[in-house]
Length: 125
Image 1: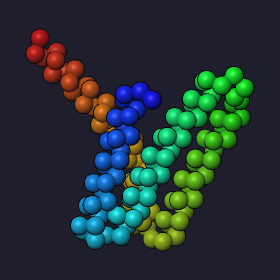
Image 2: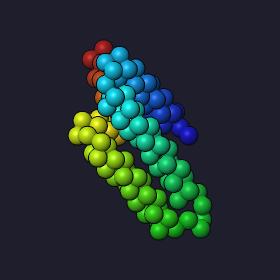
Image 3: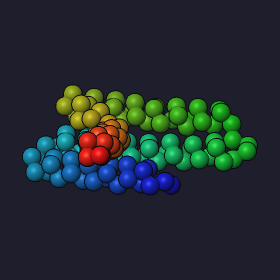
Image 4: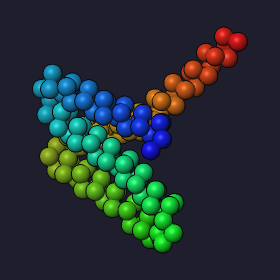
């Protein structure tokens, strides 16, 4: 696993813990349960994508069907999670959907910080 992927995992776990603590402080069950579960599912999805891409690239007998099957499995699990959250309450659905975006948010923030560092370095020179 490369350095940037480990950084995304680490930042996503830290963000998940921050959201969990924030939800406990506010005592909002939708935040500390639905958002935390969504973030955990999002981290699992990232790990699953990494594992599946490793299998597809490094195994000679890996098929495209296997990749499509695991891709579909991830989205069915996400759909079931969101359906359960919607069954509970709309607030839980929104919190769970935002939890599913934790990894994407962290990737975006890492890319933004790289771009900001590049701009600062260009301005210094």
